[in-house]
Image (tube, rainbow, N blue to C red; front, top):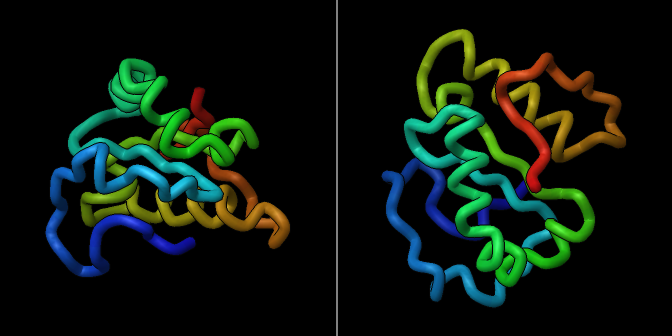
Length: 108
């Protein structure tokens, strides 16, 4: 996948809604810093109208998900869960086995 916002190797930054307007990505992954899946889902649910506006193809196509930040931002064994979950989510045609629950969940 290609990151449409942010910079590889760069620091995390708050992205204003206006900067994301018009991107309409193929897939939408929401991984709020420090959030587990339940809190990431609640945050996405609160912003549902905006997310549907910013990523209509991803949401309508069932290609939106929330992630547990511990699987994507902390060094350690859980980062492997995050990598495996991303591989299965981004490239289902490649036959990557989806890991057990905990890293990514479909949204909404």
